[in-house]
Structure formats: C-alpha cells, structure tokens
Image (cartoon, rainbow over all chains, first blue to last red; front, side, top):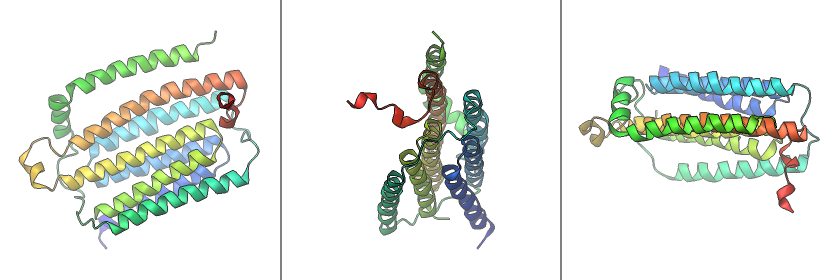
Length: 165
Length: 110
C-alpha cells in the first residue's frame, strides 16, 4: 500500500464520517461546521487528483463563501437553540431504509460492472490553471459570460426576496 | 487507484445527502444536504476527468481532458447563485411562519 492509497483512504474516511456527523448533530451550527470538514476533505481529494485550481476554488467558494452565508443565516435567526421539531421515528426509519437500499442497488450495479481504468493520481496537467484557462477561454467563453448574468440575477433576486415589505 | 473506489466514495456521499433530505426537517440542513450531493457529483467528475486524461484522444487534443473540470467550475458557479437565492427564501419563510420546519409548508397539498 503506497502513500496515495493511504491518503485516499484517510480522506474518504474523514469525508464520510463528517457527512454522517453532519446528519447526526442536533444543532444547526454543528452541522455547518461538520460540512466544512467534508468540503476540506473533498479539496484534499482534488489535490490528490492533481486538480489544484478546483481545490483552491472549492475552499474559497464552498468553505469560504457559502458556509459563511449559512452561518450568517443561522445566527441571524438565532437557531442555536433546540429548534428541531418533534421527531417522527417511523419516517426516520423509512428514509434511512430507502436511502440505504438505493446505495445497495447502485453499489451492486457498480460492482458487477467490470471497470478497470486507473485514475492518474498526482500526475497530468489537466487540472492545472494553465490548461484550464486555455480551455475556459477558448471553448467556453459564452457560458462564462452568461454565468455573470446568472450571478447578477441571483443577486437581484436575493435582494428582492429578502426585502421587508 | 482505480475508478471504482472513487465511484463508491461518491455514491456513499450522495446517498448520505439523499438520506439527509429525506430524514431531517430543518430547512437549512436539507439545503446543506443538497450541497453535499453537488459536491459528490463534482468529485466524481474530477475523477473521471483524470481517468480520461490517460487516453490517446486526450493526448492528441490540447484541451480534451479539462472539459470535466470546467464543468465542475460551472457547477460551483450555479451552486453559489442557488445558495444565495435559497437562503433568501428560507429567511423569508422564517419571517412569515417563525419556523424552518419544511413540513410546515404543506399548504399546496390540499
């Protein structure tokens, strides 16, 4: 077992464990902090896959901007108190069973398919910013510019929805 | 490291997100589980891109293997826009109903 495999297993265990902890925590603030751990471990996966640009963007956008927005909303509403409504254990059981059976079906489908292709770890320049920039500004200029319109409309929409009237 | 390990990891994260959407009733946590599902898909796209970059078609073209990572970049852009609008909707819902229970919003059912 070499170092890459060890790192992959470590990051996967951290990601899955923190995702489960996010579901199990009672307070919304704790859930948000566990989700930040998940995002950091996924960024570690990106670094292991030699996709450094996406790793940095993932930390800045997800762990930096989006989760801070979530924390702001939780603190704005003062949700740190126990606000989870009365539990319905039968619905919990039904949700867990249906999700687990979905996982079982998908995993059995993956296991019966014969996939042998290796993933190139730590080599290759497909994720470096040089090649990504060339791809983005040669082939995908129009979607890139349209996404700025999307951001503008999202900003205006958020302001209009959040306006007190 | 084979592609199968990455598929299994992404499927596990995606299923955890689905279970969260089904089980939790707090609207903010349901929203966070959607983000988790988006991230699982992103991870699988990057893994497929790195699997693809070993092929001969990728070596012939300059920008062939980077397409999936550009796709992940656009998914992140759309997720950021979605979060800003969604959190505004949750804030408005809390202001009107003083609750963030998603089961409270069943007035369209009848």
